[in-house]
Image 1 (tube, rainbow, N blue to C red):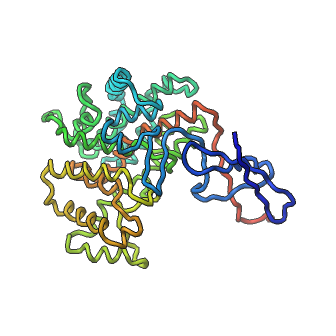
Image 2: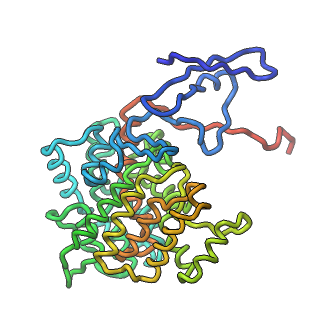
Image 3: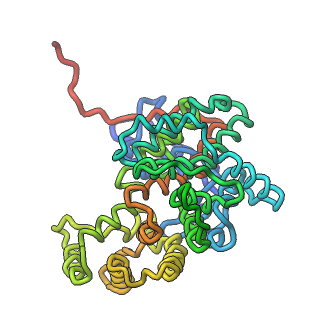
Length: 423
């Protein structure tokens, strides 16, 4: 399989190690260091930033050139021509569906959106003011107690049923989390509505007022879900894979991914955008905060600008900017003080040499945060929305691993503690 070799020579060891070098279909070559452990040698890579933890065929990112591919399809094309559920099918199955396959998949998801009625009482165990992600972690993890008829991960059919249930029920649970926090009754999903329409229906309608969902807002939600559907081996996806490598059930694995996503350095970025805007407070303060952002000795950071992976423009942000403009126009919010402030920050980041030279362009979190606020979704629910969109990616990676040849994850360490000592 490996045509090339890398030679490793370590001072003090009279041996040269020959390591296979693999080439993927795209991206840099990878040195296989698995054989070193049998020689008592480990590599040291905090955060695994230089380590490929798995082989995957799902998503490819070229951060230097702003490229994001799902199964080979550019994200810009999927955002323009596809929709969230079709993209979810692509991630799960490797190919875009035929019209019959798409209809069947969409119909299956629609008819799995209801949750077990006893989950309603499960919510009563949480405080009303609990953080939505705390509730989401608990409720998703508990699904395995309600749907334990599909937990044999060795069975293809069981894995497929679990995948359908998770994708279908996440927006229902997300809306239930919101309704519970504000003391409103839960709204049942409706099978005639699309995925995103159903979510907005369950979020904002009540039994005494069931209004039609604005198609522009439904389309915007679909774009947000689609653009967050997968992003390769990030922290939460790697968490799902690591949990899955133990043989844990898929509901537990996705709950683990949600917990990882909760971290402000990962899924909390769009929430941080709104908190930053609240801190700036007014358009007249922007110049002051721009100076603070440029000051290396100041702790203030512009949230929603730049990206750890994309050193160029975030390809998802281009799509999200257009959607953002459409939503603000539809809702007549161009004069909203906070949103005007956000647009001024965007203009500065796109034109100011300091930000341009450093690649600190507005990213997908910047625009999605603005859209979600405009739609009326509270800031603390933003990461729950992220988790809902990311579920197909998590499930696709989990399924790819479980259906292939895998080992339980067992990272090594560089021990720097005490040597043996007597009590």
